[in-house]
Length: 535
Image (cartoon, rainbow, N blue to C red; front, side):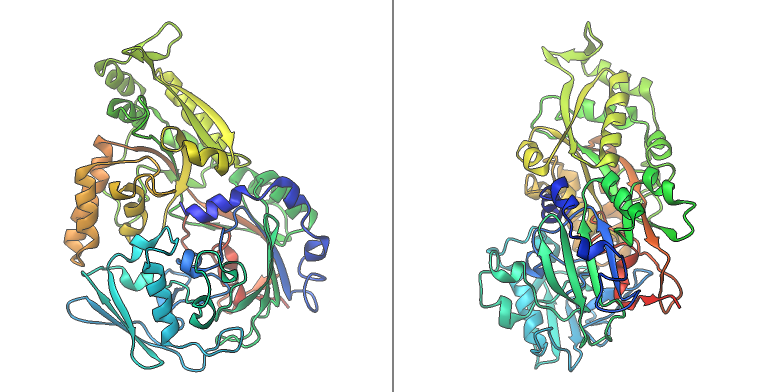
């Protein structure tokens, strides 16, 4: 889960959503733009970032619209050059990565991009004074240095196999961001980058507006104006799309199905690493008990959630790694076994009380479960989970709240959370499970602590030997069966409904394999700079 983007979502009130200006979206693709039909687009997303600074985490996974990284992911999630002219040259020992940089690239203020901007960006992210929740993702980096204006060399502490994937990190201009407070300066909301779009406005809780960068090194985008309407309520987003206020939107399966026969719109499904999980905090007398955790892990009917809540648009989740990933540990699937769950609780001394709720040593097997207000998928998952738990004798009180309400309670209260990052297994497991990050914002929300898991996570990120890495991540996934600090429920496909008015040079709109943090950098508009109006 991306802490800052999720927390920012809570600030998007329904009133703010309904106040989204008519000028921006009354005539999608037409009046909203700076010219004729097709030169502008308005899309509805569910979350907004807290900051637009790469130094604070924005654009760390690519597709930031305003910025570029040294590398980028293509439609097949393969690395391709961006601000670099080619993929890096890697030393035989895996400790040195060298990048040659494009010449003639300029920031949107006209100043040249050089190697010093790359050095500034990475060194600032690594500075403990910088409020970047993802700093540990660059733990392997010892130093970065410029060799002239157009060459950068990274030196690692240890061989970190996915380091090149980390260099999709958006690059900030040293001449602006380096002369103000990195955490609170104006650059955090009024950024300047080398990307295909320039931010022209940000109304918190309402919208972000972008104008095409006419001097973009990759060519000026045909979509001249791009607007992201921040609409946290699923129903409101669907209503606005149907009314013609939006050109596209992300929608849960039940609402996307309502557009299935709309000839003017297409539904695009994206495979994802996005999971829904229940945190089971160690500091609660019920959720901190391993027997309760193990019982809940098999009491839950994951397939029923996929069938009824996701309408088939997803798959059961048994951990952060999807079952169709090559890194998934076969044999760690958990069957739905209500009788087995009851047996685990019986043997642990949790006995049914008069009302059916189990009790041990005077403690009732009861705990709250928070989910985000307005998020129907989380609500449905929370209610289904509570229903399954009740059959085993565990009482779960599902309740909605904003992140401002939920976050202070996360140390003791369970949360219906989301997360997931495509690519290397280090990406979607380290921040979630390592005990050193317990309680660090939205990292390791369950305060999970397991020495076997900690060691395996370190082993997996400190070698580039494929066999050793596979063994490490198999160990992590098998340890979660014995001591599940979370109940993983489903991996969710993302569904987007978009007006069928654009094409791309490759033929039609596409989606990538997406992370949890969807809508802003993902969706069919991941490459909106390459969209062309249909003739």
